[in-house]
Image (tube, rainbow, N blue to C red; front, side, top):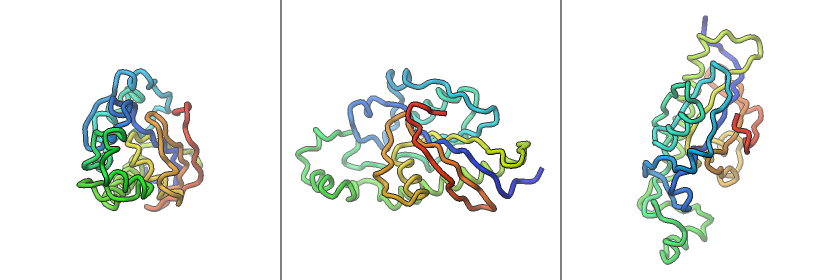
Length: 212
């Protein structure tokens, strides 16, 4: 079977489950922290089609979330999908940073200034989008083995970080990055048309309590 030149993808972008740092409202980026006890308890196995293609960021909190939601599906690991490095803010919360003059300037900027000694935001955006294109290329390649009928969609799910989701949704929808802040375990369902290496967003919705 040849690779399909055009098909519909139902893609779920899911933020990883809760970690201890999330519970304490800390800025957690490069720190490779696992899910908390509460985080694991909040996740339930997702009911998905047998041929669902699953992707995950490489950090523990994403891989553990993928395993909880999709225990019988081995994910493709997208190395570019780690969270941004928060630099001097890493693993601190607002109370701990309240006397930091730069933090106050950062807050006053609407959180649009760079993180001190952290990853540049343009670099984070670039690698997040690179990972998305890698994800779509893998889906396209996998269509060789799927007996798709006319108009039948492919189901795929990606477990990644809140910042990655905000980048992707902002790029796809064309709206402000901060409109797409997502709680742990939540995310978006997207319908995409993939055609000869390019894609178009058809529609999207917030998942809420309905993961899949």
